[in-house]
Image (cartoon, rainbow, N blue to C red; front, side, top):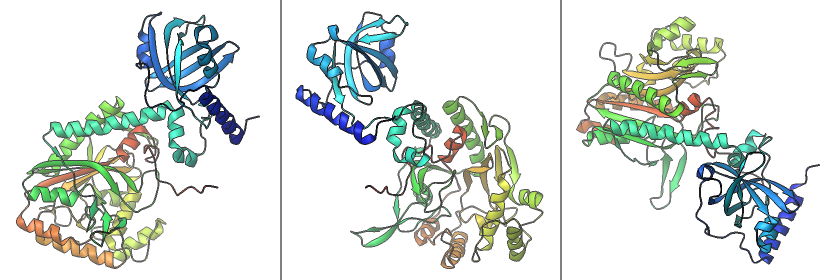
Length: 484
């Protein structure tokens, strides 16, 4: 029968008291030996004296000898504590080691009869005494919410999860290196804003005590700020950081997540599409070692030619409805027949977006979606040949949008009118409609060169990794835990 947590903690507290009675410090601030990473220790010659430090993950005692498994980020090594190889006090101390403790140890390397390279301890120190037992690696934490709440435990026993975040760091580093190599300057723009802009999303609201005003957490990676930089004379900028949207949680959505956006002067959305395709292929290959994936039961090959599909035509082909010609009532009726979530105050552009989100689920990609109606793209430049649509594209992979770019609107009059339309929808109850930003309109009045912009979030990494976005966040947000 498994011991209760209370009994285990009490036994470990007794061990802690015994350690102190031996005049040993169970929580020293530094190591006494020079740590040799486990993988280097294993490469040394038998007989060499090495020092290691890490967490104890297993313990097997047989009278006068004890075998310990020690693990650090580079791997693991077996340790052997023998009564005749240690001073009496240190051997007594070895009896007080529990699974989960951190120790440092030094001694010569040898091979056991089973052929396992092992460090025979001639001296060691406890670095941290653990008071709670780690779950077994085999069973782990089974409840998903518990895994997220005690992420530190999940990480401690799951090396694959740790590897996932090393891989994620490589993902962002590759993007950063790619853009820097193309001459883009990394910038930082405000997280707190007077006006939340750059996306259709409901913002979080906070209060600034010193200025005595309400502010918003940004909902884009500084889109309107980076375009202000274009007005100010910069030509290539990008930012990678956290942004916040007060919306629902799903496999693909979180409230705070990492986003990248770049802005490129004297280029348009077609130039951007070429750059982005090159970037996605390089990032996939560098991060995952392949460009072929199976995502949401769809085979996706990023290496093959990327197709271009039209927004209006795709909806018409799938649903038999021409959104450019259909009335509000016809679009609303189609929404109803498909039983899609809807509200009575949804404006026409929001209904069109609902139809598209329904259709996209069957598109494996990789594809560039183009021809977006102007109503769903308040910050994009109109197509000179068809003013009803804009110069915009989205990356479609495995039935989802995994990137968004366009030729940026730089006509201040057109921008002002579209802001007003969005503000009207917002005033009517659409909390995701964009706010009127008078200062941004003023900036455009000074003149912004032709600019293309693009953004992607960590959802791309999650899709390519075959995980939910929540699984790919180190510490996903949860409701407060109720303690007894």
